[in-house]
Amino acid sequence: MADQNNSVHRVAGDSKKRVEGFSKLTREEKVAWIAQGFLEPGSSAGEQIASFLHSDAGVQRILSGLSENTLCNFPMPYGIAPNFLINDEWYAVPMVIEESSVVAAASSAAKFWSARGGFLTKVLSTVKLGQVHFSYKGNKARLFQVQEELTARLRAEAAAITANMEQRGGGVLGIDLLDFTHLEPEYYQLLVRFETCDSMGANFINSVLEQFGRSLVAFVETHAGFEDTDREVDIIMAILSNFTPECIVHAEVSCPVEALEGACEHMDGPAFAEKFRKAVRIAEIDPYRATTHNKGIFNGVDAVVLASGNDFRAVEACGHAYAAKDGQYRSLSHCTVENGVFRFWMDLPLALGTVGGLTKLHPLAGLSLDILGNPSAPKLMEIIAATGLAQNFAALRSLVTTGIQKGHMKMHLQNILHHLGATDQEAQAVQAYFEDKVVSFSSVREFLQLQRIGGIIE
Ligand code: MEV
Image 1 (spheres, rainbow, N blue to C red):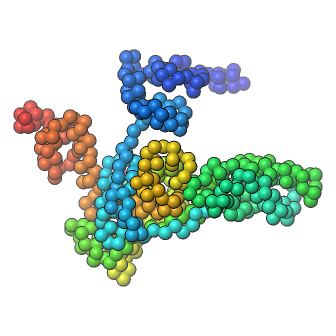
Image 2 (image 1 turned 90 degrees about the vertical axis):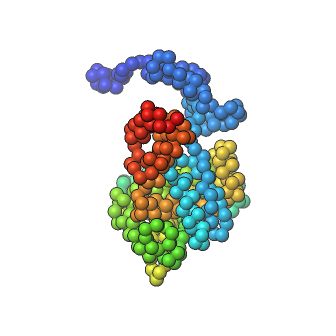
């Protein structure tokens, strides 16, 4: 039927845009195919793409091998936010981010708090989770009766996979059998708790879970206590959960409200503290504000997660799920002003690794970890949570005082000047002129043109 009305096998549009076996083409062939089908004739894409390959073939081989169909690299700025005092130790924090002002804001907040005792951080727990989702048509009571025997068998049959992790102090912490048949017929789950030490542990967890799935099927098929009609288990999927509400780090800053003097030119410490507290409170109440507020936290968090070769999608997904853990999406950070003391903190779930995966493979991830003193995974959780809190502090400080555009526009102006090919002398004149004016691309271009025509700037 579908064939007749031509809705399934129809090849839409220009067939030059469709390809079989793209992955088997060489890099050069891929580029040529893209240029031919998707770019204007005579485009310089080939040279442009080639210019973003790494000059060291070995490094390029590593980078190309990280993903599929790689044409070249996509550079992002790699910067440092210095002056982080965390639990009385100094850190210079590597950050990878394309958004202007983020690194400057983190650095400024780090410096501000380093003069007020710095960040206090503590890892509260490091448990990671995985699930085996399965269907079972048989006798529920029987399944739960043999639960202990089942979990012992699962552990025993996964021993070859878990031995190494156990030697490092980790492994499978617990296995729960959960019944979801009130929500979906025949649906059960094994919820497994893991400790993966300094590794993010995704491969380890998924390997164990897949083995658990095989063992579960075999256990029910062969166990003497099951009727023949009760033996059918169908594994739907076995995969880690990126929601890790028990892999949590606490970060906080605090000081007497008077010590906030200097946070803002036009407000005294107590007034600033109260306005700041209210800004955080609004993000606790209102999901629209909370989303932007938490985005600001992840500006800092993601940048260090990326710089250290960790999985920022996993960290973001988990953080946002955690922000909605009580049924409403809320601010991840909190603030109180009590008895003359300003306190600003957050508990953040962070599933990270400092060994294995990209952390050692990507040359710059290795460098980031070196700069951070080769931290353990818990220590990296603390550094990243402190950076997220610093970022949040800096954003709110700007928002409740000058607004963020002032700082943003300074950087934006630099980018515009760069784009317009301004000389140092022209840049100085533009900066002076726009000191108290609204910056836009067209206004800067117009000002520069007038200056150039009038020969005001030589
Ligand atoms: C911009 O990237 C981040 C902010 O919007 C965060 C916030 O509003 O709290 C400034």
